[in-house]
Image (tube, rainbow, N blue to C red; front, side, top):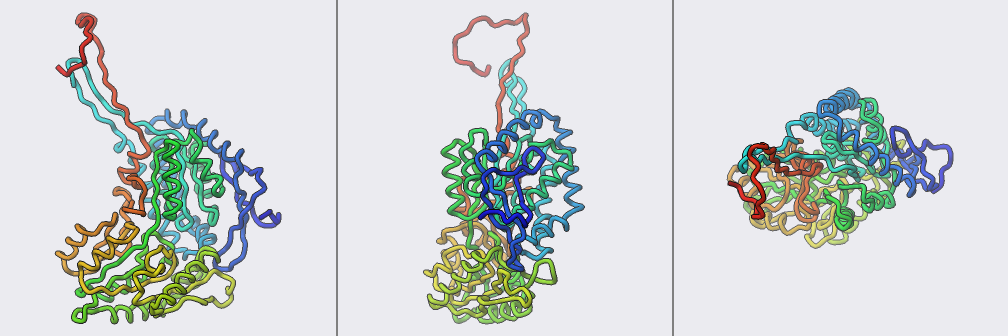
Length: 507
């Protein structure tokens, strides 16, 4: 698509300024609540990609060699600036993503947790020291930055997901190139300007606006030492495999299809509230949303019908509308994604599921062209339906009824994904057994969205994570640094040992 010359143009941020691309290629940015085009995105060409990488590489030596105290001061300044402008960034996010502004502000605050963690980085990159490991010989380790690292972030969290990575990467001395989603690119440039205001040297934080060409450019460039990715499973697998072929470290976090197990002793009002919050918050566009609710229904202890009724009642109370106004849930990010999610509802219905609440055809008065799809509740979904086995990534909750606890565990463990799961119960023994036996990376006990706090690490199992490198926490510091072991001897001229061709020993 070519530029109309009317819409604002979002460009890459390279060397402390916006940089135009010579590609002539554009993509359109929408306001999802109105369906109107609001901006155009200047997609990077080969020259822009090369300039981004070269600028970051040039900035690396000086940033690496800057003292820990001076780097830390920049981190603290960035944290204070962002803390005072959460609402401003939330408005930027909502205008392009569509989530309600309070949810966008919550996203920024969760990202700030990682900034807080990164501010304490000096204590997390200390090496070790062994004096006199052998007579007169000391051995010690030091942790050093990698160099230029890339971040490829998804549309659903344009601020929080990049902040899972770049505060730590920058704190320990790396230079970062962020490739945001084409659907909501403005938050990344907003953050770049804030880094500049905080005193970060130009070139340490770069925003590369682009599509697959930009992704492949980061994968193939030898100067880029590591890549962090969050997104769908097929693309996570692609990034992991291709980046590994090019000798890079890779964090590749993929998709999910998360299950919430409800035991008969659970507080059903608590369950219903949390099912609504998890399933319909951010219009279900969360990799940690609980999209499948498993209920024990064995003819004796059955809460399924009552739970369905409670969820249905709460859905009727939700206000769906423009995220910048008075709404509980906003639109989906694009028309194409809205239609994709609606297609899963079609599939579930064709496969024999019961559509209890149908969000297809939902509109908002005065904003009929917005990318709307109402909260949807599906009961008795067949386990062979694509609407059950695949990641929907929309405001769709499905109910699965099982007869036993063991059947529920097997159902969760047999799925393709292993990102997050939850159990709701008042039985401590059942909860302990659940956390021990379930094969999923992040587990909630009476907590619907078990995203770990910043000083623990985020990452799933199976097709939700490729490789073993998780996000933030101590794992993040390990990922963005490389360790050297140094063996040192300072000879006393009076005690020279002479020639010895034997293998070195510790004596």
